[in-house]
Image (cartoon, rainbow, N blue to C red):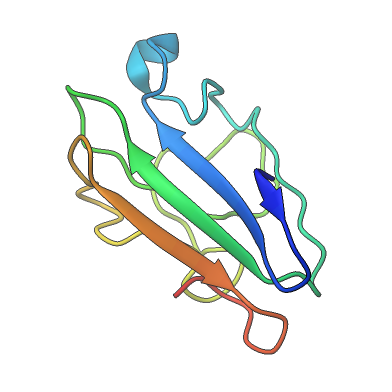
Length: 107
């Protein structure tokens, strides 16, 4: 997590950060190697940014599965995904997603 206060934990997820796996990575990790474990009581905000100039990207929170799915699957909890999940978002596009203990899920 990037920062922490009493009410909220924040994290930044950047797609295409490096050329690893042809740019198909998140924060420089690919194939499910980036794991973020969040206690259910935390209120979490994720800033998702596409850094890749060549490909649109999307993000989805999924349960730990090997191998990682090649496409969208049911999210770990309701609305735990970026917009345009199939199409992705272009370079420089960003979205803030979040969950709260009272209403888990990304908004």
